[in-house]
Image 1 (tube, helix red, strand yellow):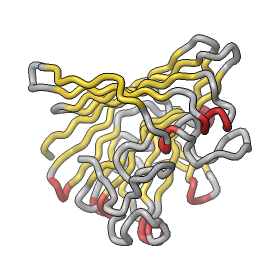
Image 2: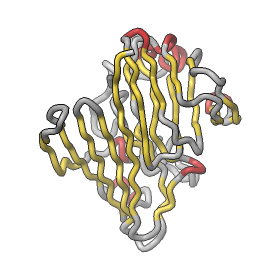
Image 3: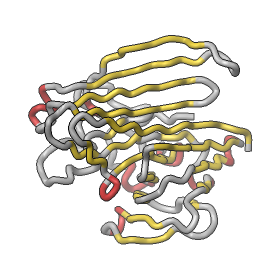
Length: 248
């Protein structure tokens, strides 16, 4: 269900191309104009495994994992020294991912975040997305112009990088080639992002083969731009998505 590039670089300081990279504490470029790695530092840092257990449930055992991230030399160099992040993953017949951020500072903390999920499909060109009908989005491939999706299912036909603000809808990925529907439901998230590099951009990505781009679509659970989260001192915020798979 999750795509992973065969050429992903599993190296220190490198983001993994595929899986579910965690964007934090900003999305894309840093919004305050200062220097920093794309999508923040969380996806290129080592996290600590704080908890792991197989827990029985009515529909079979589930693997529970909790990872934590705190200040590091890199985060401090970027001005982030008083925070704590927990990432909980529950793997079973469904997949639950929960990102919780705590502000340990005496000043407000302004954050953007995303679970940059790469979902595996047989062919993105024959995949339909439902749940975003007639929704407003910002087109990052066209200078962030505001546009609206059609009233029917969304079918990608070219490089796609769409940010849907103020959008809490569940999105269903109709993966016709694999005969399945992947549904992404979320809470604590006001932004949805849909991304695929298509052929031209994929050819420029060193960590992806030129012909791998039809094999995935990114449907991201996020809080970005106008949906960024202002955390007051001592406050926490949790963002969660639950992924289910059913036969089409």
